[in-house]
Image (cartoon, rainbow, N blue to C red; front, side):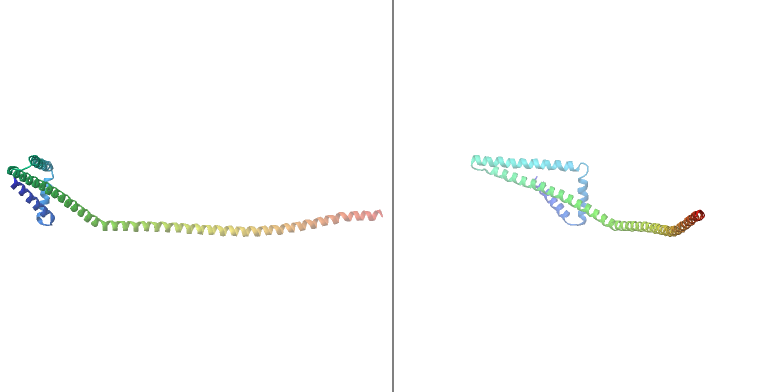
Amino acid sequence: MFQLLFMVIFSEMAVIMVLSFKTPLRKLTLMVLDRVKRGRGPLMVKTVAATIAVVMISSVYSMMMIQKRWIDDGSANPTEQILMVKHLLEATLMGGVLFLALMIDRLHHYIRELRIRRKSMEAIKKQGPEDGKSSGSDKVKALEGEVTTLQAKLKQLESDLETKTKEMDAAEANAVALRKQSEGFLLEYDRLLEENQNLRNQLESLEQSPSRSGNKKNT
C-alpha cells in the first residue's frame, strides 16, 4: 500500500511539474484531464477521493486511540509504536495525495480559463480595428447626411428670404403708390374746396346784387 501511495504522489508531482511549464507534454496532459472530467470521470474521481479520505480519517482515529492507551497505561509497547508510525505514514501520504489532486484540479482549471481568456482577447483585438473602421465610416456617413440636410435647409431659408424680400419690396412700392395717390386726393380735395368756396362767393354776390337794385328803385 505504501508503494502505491508513493507512486501516486510522485505521479501527481510529475503532472504538476508538466502543467507548470509550457511544453508539448502540457497539451497532452490537458487533453487527458479534459477527458477525465467528462462523462463519469468526475464521479469516479470523487469516489476515489472520498475512499482515501475515509481511510485517512480511520488512520487518524487509530492514532488517537493508540495515544489514548499510552496515556492510560503510562507506557508504550513496540507493537503500538510500529502501528503508530504506520498509521501516521498512511495518513500523511493520503493527505498528500488529496492535496496534490486538488492542486492538479485547480491548475487545470486556471490554465483552461487562461486559454479561454486569451482566445477571447485575441478575438476582441481582431474585431477591434474592424469595429473602429465600421464605426468611423458610420460616423462619416452620419456627418455627410447632416451636412446635406443643413445645406437643404440653408437653400430653403435663402429662397424664403428672397421671397420675403420681394414681398417687402412690393409692399413698399404699393405703400409709395398709395401715398402718392393720397397726396393727389388731398390736392384734388383742396382744389374742390377752393372751387366750392368760389362758387359760394359768386352765389352770395349774385344774391346781393338784386337786393341792391330793389333798394335803389324804392328810393
